[in-house]
Image (cartoon, rainbow, N blue to C red; front, side, top):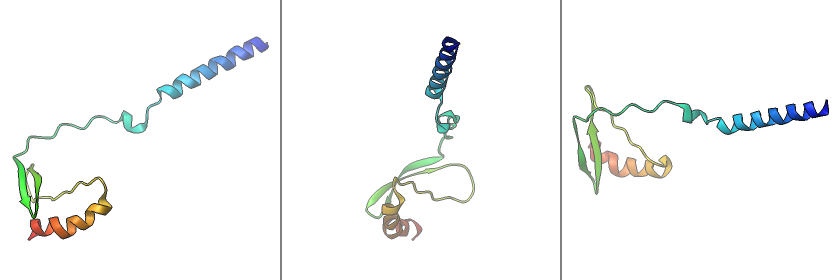
Length: 88
């Protein structure tokens, strides 16, 4: 009986280890993003002392979107140097 118990424990342990090894993070199971549509216009716009990439998509009122690796250090630069050049 102890041989059967040991075999059952070994089987359950092996099953648990292989299931845990195959378990993916939740973000890894999400579908891929669809491709972006072609831009109506894009390029580099001079803003103060930099060149900023822009692209125009779709119809309607424009939306201004900034992406930064870290918002804390960038927020002051965006407010003081970039936004006044864009907004006027």
